[in-house]
Length: 304
Ligand code: NAD
Image 1 (cartoon, rainbow, N blue to C red):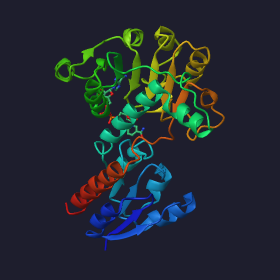
Image 2: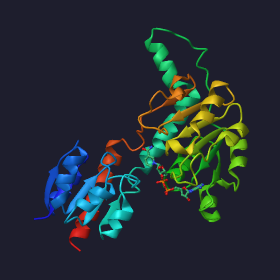
Image 3: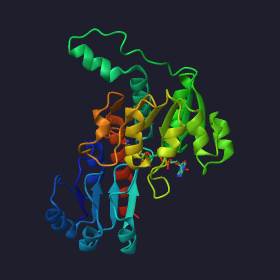
Image 4: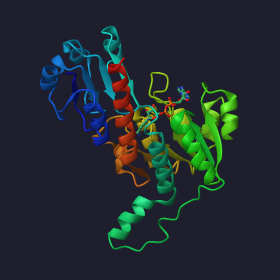
């Protein structure tokens, strides 16, 4: 019987699909030693982002054929080591696009209207209507960095709010931008100068690390709001902190941080910073989709 080891919480519907093709063992919260032991005779390993599937884990596996990542990025899996051993890695890149795009819109609105700060104030028993005066999204220019799956979903939603969209993505065809109604800008600095809101939707790579740095922040409008639901390392947090502290830009709304969970991150001491603990894909729908898409792929691989 095929042994399927699941080491992070997985949606029930995904487990049901996996049970059609093998014996499923759900073992979450394993130590590295326990994982090294359990992986030995597993044919399939299913993870989300918690389990680190490093080279030593892969090398210990004697029967492993497939690794399923119920989510988007495969940064927690040593894909090279897996490929060397002929192990197939499958993921669900589309599963969370809408959830991340919706959180992006939520954070944009929350930052523009100071919703978290106003809620906290209200709950303290205050009734301060002047302090939380916000700005509208309507008629503003949104700069979208990265026009892939999530970026495009954000564009559609921002259009419904009456925003003008400019985009920076050197790898997408002009026609795609045109069909989305996005003005493609080939210089990120130009985008930073023109945008009222800036949102990031690129992967973190050596090329995109600190794609928003001191230079780009210095070019932004005084009322600019930055939203980051992609990866923390895309923004130079030190430069962002300085700019927010000195009021050189209006606000930042962050779902991701250079270090997660953040430890003594000064950004979190600022009033004009709001955020969530990496919740982009954390919805019932996205998790169900991520699990079931990956389970179906595993089923296909096992059935050849
Ligand atoms: P995607 O691959 O569909 O799109 C990424 C886009 O970035 C592509 O169009 C690509 O051309 C563009 N790009 C690559 N390098 C670039 C560069 N140097 N400059 C400008 N554009 C560049 O990815 P996606 O599904 O839209 O996801 C985007 C990112 O969102 C992921 O890489 C991931 O880091 C993040 N994400 C976060 C969460 C969360 O929980 N907050 C969940 C899912 C994904």
